[in-house]
Image (cartoon, rainbow, N blue to C red):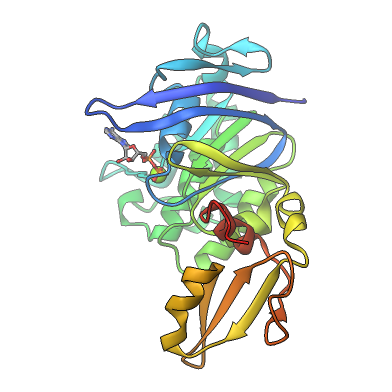
Length: 294
Ligand SMILES: Nc1ncnc2c1ncn2[C@@H]1O[C@H](COP(=O)(O)OP(=O)(O)O)[C@@H](O)[C@H]1O
Ligand SMILES: [Mg+2]
């Protein structure tokens, strides 16, 4: 089924005055969509709002044409959500907890529910740990368990909030592979502050800063305008400040302890600068540098 989520002009101010969302508009279709932004950008706020766990001040959210503010049940019945802080009660095993969440999600037929639980345990590579207490799981196992519970009931939209934060490289890799498997015939919205996660998985992404979208498109769309505009030069540590003052410096990379500045400039400033092929990370850094000095 073709799903689509239309978010229009969402605003959210918390008590105390923090404006976490300042006019967010987005359209999502089946596939993996990455929400990229630094800590405090508003990613979790947007995700909790989309999951109908908290209201926005204004704006609208339509899922498959149904207004989720008027009819939250429609989206909730089709949603799998993995919150940023996924905690579990002590003293319950993986299989028991999945069974219990399955009941809450309305999977009332015992046998079908059990079948689904076993399939999800296998898919998330947790079958060997099915009788283990979930609160004793490692970080990576807990995230995979979090995905298993989010997938119960075959949701059409899955929202996962910073699922790779704190995982070691191997766990992170396994988790990203798992996400890419499930991102086929449904909407998967993934938030992260790690550019590489998005680059590896997502067909579409949006970059969010201070509650606003600053860029949106495919990774190629965002990288394309940077071709021919990135330059690098090896400098001495004492020169870095003057480069930052003069150019739009995207990155200062230390190579063998020596700084290399990477700048955004539509033309080669001088022959000592060498061209750099742009990556999504450069595009991300450029969104943090407005206006560009050219
Ligand atoms: N429950 C809350 N009450 C007050 N302020 C909040 C609350 N949750 C988040 N904020 C603030 O809203 C802003 C966005 O936070 P958040 O949505 O968690 O961003 P992100 O997930 O991108 O790190 C931050 O300034 C944060 O401090
Ligand atoms: Mg967050």
